[in-house]
Image 1 (cartoon, helix red, strand yellow):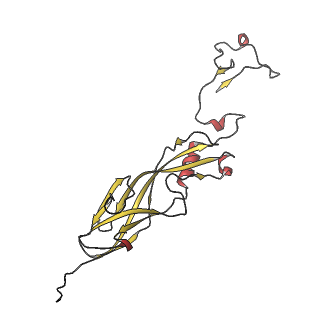
Image 2 (cartoon, helix red, strand yellow):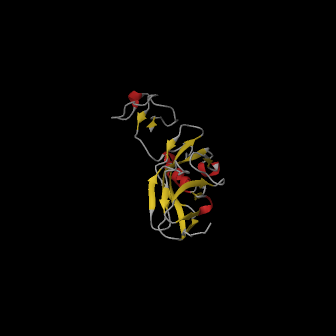
Image 3 (tube, rainbow, N blue to C red):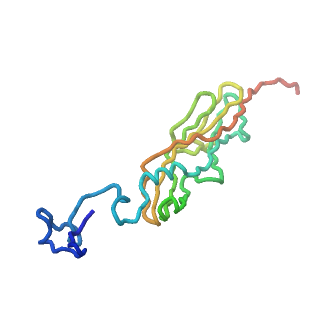
Amino acid sequence: MYRWWVDRDGDPLPAEEWPAGSRPAGPLGQQLVGTTCLPNLVPGVRPVPTVEMIVAAFHQTRWATARVVTQPEGNTTLVNLETFYRVQWSREGFEPGEVDTVDPARMYGYRVQIRPRLVSYRYHFGDGDSFGPTDSPGGTYPHGQVVHTYREAGRFASFVQVRFGAQFRVNGGPWIEVPDQVTVRQPATTITVKQARSVLVNQ
């Protein structure tokens, strides 16, 4: 922050008439007062969105839903069979890489955009085992990186936890990292695990 010394009529005083110890330091010959991390408290300055406001908007982002689906298809598998997991995002909400625009009325009229980014997934298989953190969205045979084998039959509630970070920008400016992250537990998918039995058949 900088300031000028002025007379009673509001006209700038020449530097030689400034109080003792004052000297020009700014780009236009102002006196340096100091720095502030509270720009909205500076008199006469238009309020700008604060980091706290942007972090709050980040936490209020309407995230897309990430469900786990499996191969074999139909979320049904067999005991001792390798089962491949992958993440399937919903069409609603914002997934990593998509851009959410905050209501300008909440940001003093500025256009603030938030772009979620993936930090990690953690897969929970419902039988006590988990995998992660990882940045892999999984996949199908034979290249899928998220694989689990159930050792007993049953029905298991499997889900993924997604850890989001984000970037933001104001009025189309450069993207800046949001100084916070959040972990969101996603809805569970029921995995049915069946026991295969061998049967002798006369031909």
